[in-house]
Length: 281
Length: 210
Image 1 (tube, helix red, strand yellow):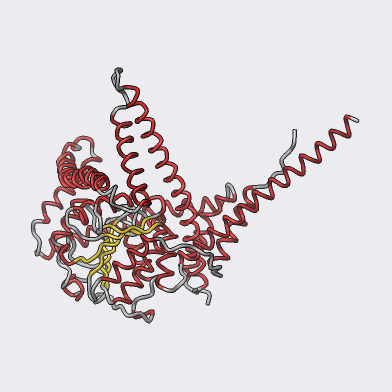
Image 2 (tube, rainbow over the protein chains, first blue to last red):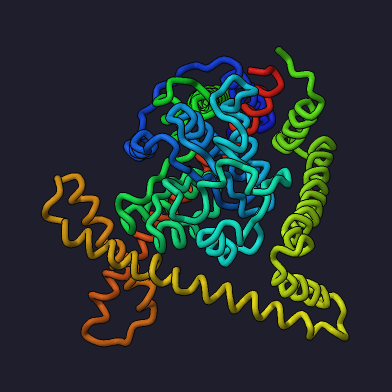
């Protein structure tokens, strides 16, 4: 019996980790195609008039949503460039941190040299508990669902909130979170507001079907590859591009490992066969 | 420039701890795991208290006095932990489930059931008008949707002259569902690799101030 040489899985993971870290520091520029779905989201945001209010809202856990941050950050940069305004509506306990992370990472605030000012161009609302009924309440009358922002400032003191009273003021609902079904049902289905879902790769197939259910109102990007496409359209290399590089490099390394493993196994087989022949003689 | 923010360093360290699982059982992974669990629980409690404070501020200020109803119902739900008076918690729970179901069921039927049927009919209607590539896409979706529905609705089919053709269509539907599962698994793998890269990327970029 041929003994296959052992290659510890830890070594493979370390090599893959090095590949991911390397691409995070130094972008490789691995080629990829911008999907039509990503281009459609970009075009829709581009078509919105200056001053339009865009919502970032939904719910699930921070770690699970992280993949969608590539698209969301690129979209926030796009919004700031277009002079749009953003209202962050967290419907999950960890959504506040995630939405704040995305907004900060986009570097659009004036403290980072960007064009946006808190309270005027964007606002972060606090966690809104209550699930679907709370979402419906918020869409009907924002102030009946929430009265202050995440810092405890009254909504009446925030200039952006003077123009945001109900769903009628929303030009686009963006959702970088896993929990999109309620958004499709209540925001798009019942109120006809366009939704852009920056879907995690595993959620993409589920969300894609809604494009046919609500043609022209549902836009979906696919995980980090969608984010890489959006970054390319915006003319910068961010998390999505790094993820694409890391994935490409890791895939190439895994392929090399597979080839090396097979070559080693075949050479061992030959050696053992020759040894058996010698023993027979 | 390397970050001097201790939180960024802590975040990078915890990310590294989480990934230590790939190296095998390791104390650093356990540190990461327990810290994450404790943090999530603590965060939920703090958010809960904060939400309570913010939500009921208008009640204390006297601008929304009807919030007293929510407050009473909220307190009633706490009796669930007290066996003798647990029945009191049934009232807020019943209202919660009743309102939630009432709000959701209408939207669910309109969006997921009627909406999907309408979408399939629309695609069937336009199947001869689109370009060949789109026609093929529509055809695959319509055939798989109908056959998958037949598979799910007629898993048990009465024996008769139609049982054999229905069984063929049903098998096709089963393959359609399996294909969907296969694609979903592929996408899930892509997501997990994307999550890993995003997490490492976030830690490295914040650490190095890129």
